[in-house]
Image (cartoon, rainbow, N blue to C red; front, side, top):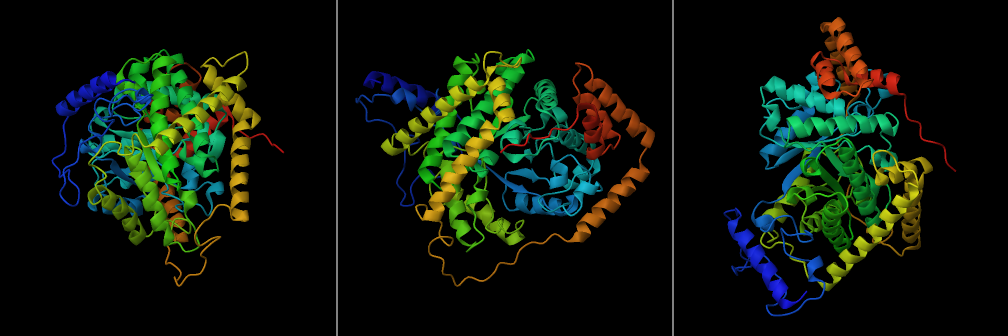
Length: 562
């Protein structure tokens, strides 16, 4: 790009920056030196390839979605939390919000993630252990008791039974008297990554895609600010993928959901802004920053050039980041504070829109109040003390970071081509990327690629080529064992008792009729969300709703592979 084009771009950025709202804050160094809101090539100089870097708030958004960067709005501190029963988790949420957290993120226990009630025999021993137990709308009411759902953004990390859980969230908001059309938050709902990495599915892919399509339509029409899909790379990375694989598989899944919306006759400019993303931030500092920058660039180009989006907001890749759980070590766990801080710093320098920082003890158990506070304070130190919010994309133009960004983008494009090729000659009715994804799931291609990457890394660790402090180097320590949070078996007994009381006190005939009506709708082309809401309002439980749909649609069994 020549000097005149660069100057014209800077002038466009300046005009948008001047017109945008900025925070009332001190944008100087610790020594009091004023800093510019963005930096670029020196005036009057050519910079070949600068169109791929550009200016914040301009296509291809390599440097961020907004001309102001974090001067306009800082990232949302959204701590992921959930344990025991709804009342216990509600107390943790109030602690997080009271300590300065900007949004909530719900962690559900394994029975809930699998669409089973706490009294299901398969739930035995798991209730409340890896997240909060939610059996019905009554639990959702308790979960957010005293928290204004119309005034706080809420993320829910659940995919298989995401739609009935979302209906419970809506009913809880209704019972608070909230205006549902004004709700804001994110539901994960990403079923592709379940087949690829996390393995928390209920049905075959087709019924799940039916529900996701219904949810997209419902939210676009009724709750426009709510994001019904958070396409997740986090679990793909945690399963052992490389940074480029995480990026490519995640964006490919996102393209599949774009094809789903288009196949429903929806306007990409209307529904695409409702798609958000969820990435892992691992310990390789510069590689992670490059991954985030490449993600925005790829998404914007594909949405414009492949899927025909013309609205600026449809081109924006908005993403939440969580620091890498898989990087945490049980050995010398206090070191995890350092790892988490570095990973969080990479997420912020990569332009994340919201962030969760893991607690130092999460490799051993759910976080204690103390460790959760340290995780929260980690973000607050980054936000308030070290000058991170002064300059948009401060590493833009770094030879190393730009080279890494280009390389990860190129690797991702190669993977997209392979996924397309998997679809063969007869693409799925939804679209060609969807065809390739479904074939890759069926053939075990994704899981095989991830397993190979995980194996290569493990070999490097065992040879000592890759180092983990406290694990394969610097193993001596004077640290003592941590006190960890333990979930009492009484939590499960109490949850089962309360659930039995609720079932005995409701109108069973109304519940049965509502669930049967929902199943009847599932046999038509009608949107299922209103009927599912009616079942939830009647106090149908999560297990009852999911079991009725399992009976109708069957259960997915992963093919055995050797």
